Length: 186
Image (cartoon, rainbow, N blue to C red):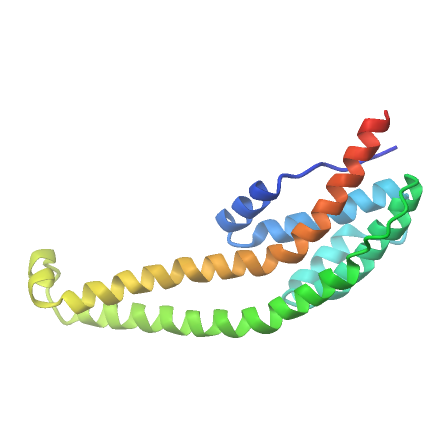
């Protein structure tokens, strides 16, 4: 019986943060592949699921969470004789909808602040000879805006990472328990 990988939740967060959210798409591909291998379904295509997720800017993943959540919580759980009373498929879908509806406006505002900060910092430097000591003495506001811009950039990365990971973590925890239960039976 083909079983999937038990993934570390902190490692998922770190990889998603380092890769600027690209790990989320890797995760979708491999979870779909693991489901195909375990259930032996021929109609599921991991490449198609990945392409639809990327092309719709993650809107397809709301459907994906429902589809694969049901497969994981019902079909796979039944195959290992696990009576799954804790089906969190609807919670995962709701979490992804909430995260998208709240996260996208927040990210938009943060990106606006980031771009504005870059423009203000860039214009301040363009109108002044680049002399760091002179810049510190006469234009501390420019450095403050620049530091704020960098901070906003990190906040954008964190919000994107968190928004992609909340539903992923819920599904991965269930998969981890399923794969560990199968390994312990062997």
